[in-house]
Image 1 (cartoon, rainbow, N blue to C red):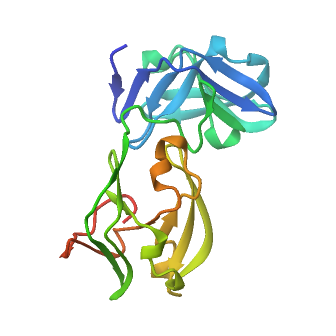
Image 2: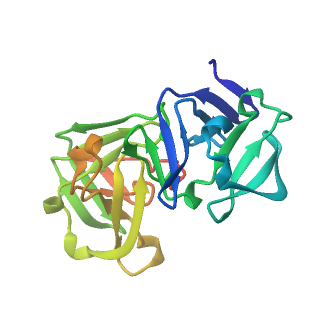
Image 3: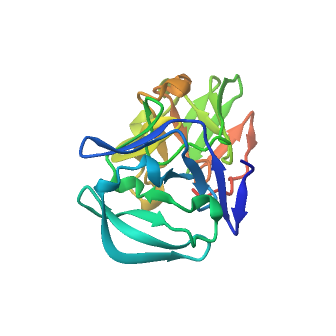
Length: 247
């Protein structure tokens, strides 16, 4: 199917088998899922109603309106209030008619084929490349050199600025304090964070993936900084701070 657009919403098919679980049961299992970009950064899955365990969907009598997707019936799923939206025959986008959208965070597990997916559906147009480099990368925070490396790994991810992942031996670990923050990425895995200094401006400036997903193993245990919030010198040249959603 050619991609369909309505406003900022784009719809495409995917050949991947997609399953969603609640309370240990697969409430939907399909090889006919739609990828629907409701916003600019990543898609979500829509399931054909015929591939959903409809007995798990409990009517609420409520509807939810979207300017681009129209009105949807709100359903509870396995005791989770309002966790599903069912689009009927009057949806303005023909492709989503007769489809169900599950709230990601309300469900317990999501799978593409037999691999679990976290945070959100993977975007087929997002690519992650990790390249060894001999560039000289130096990072300053408030005029203090916090990292200095000639052995970075450069991570290029679609739609984001390049990231420099540095060996911990090239980082002033004595200036970092664990923040307790953990985030998840569907392409790289779970990241842990450190802050620099005691000011709010230094909170969660630094992160690492201790055990990344297989496709991102090259950055295991390496350290990266938010270039949007620190001064980065590459081969002696101060880099412009990137303009991104993390700025």
